[in-house]
Amino acid sequence: MATLTKISPYRSGPPRFGTRQYVFDNSVKTYQLTPEELEQLRAGKSVDEILKEREEKKMSQPRVISYIKYLEVEAERDELKKQLEELKSNSVPNTNKQEIERLKREVIDAHKLVTEKENEIACLQELFETAMADKERLHKENLLLENQVQRLKEAISELTERNDRYSDNCIDLQRELKALRLYTLQKLQKDVYGA
Image (tube, rainbow, N blue to C red; front, top):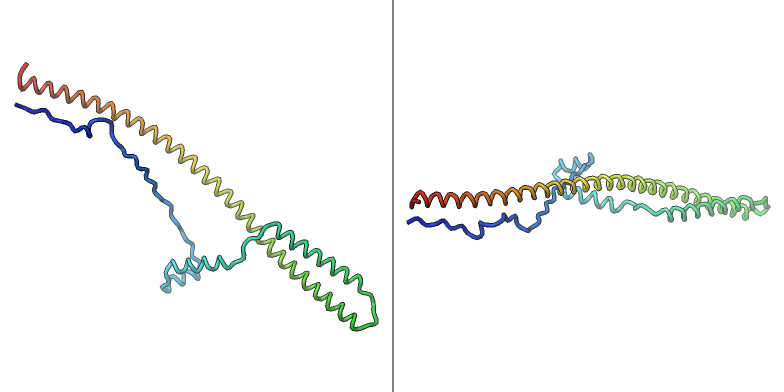
């Protein structure tokens, strides 16, 4: 007497793909070494140490300032220029040599302060322009990343649709398989036991 093959309840029913979401970080970090850093690497220094030194150098460099600070320094420079002009206009020929010497020293000091402020403003202007260039570059990078996100969303929706089609196909095939098994079982019983 032949026995029927039993199918486990786990194996019958729709396919199971699991519920865990896997997220993989496929990003790659690249580093561009300067010629000095490359020489250090060839001398046997590790890449981590070289990159750590680079970060320390970056931290010690001056940071970008705000536009308000730039305006304050520029206003201070203009005020010092006005004071210098006032000192020059107020200086009248005086017979007192000590007074003339004092005024000369004040003019020289004021001129030094003005040149220092002009140098500081030039430095701040350069930092401001660097910040604006970085802002523009980051804005372009942000647009590129938004476009990439949009393309990935479209790819996800396409893959989801494909997954749904395959799931429907799988269900249809399982139904056909079940029907074929029943037919095969009946045919086998008919062949073994007769009609």
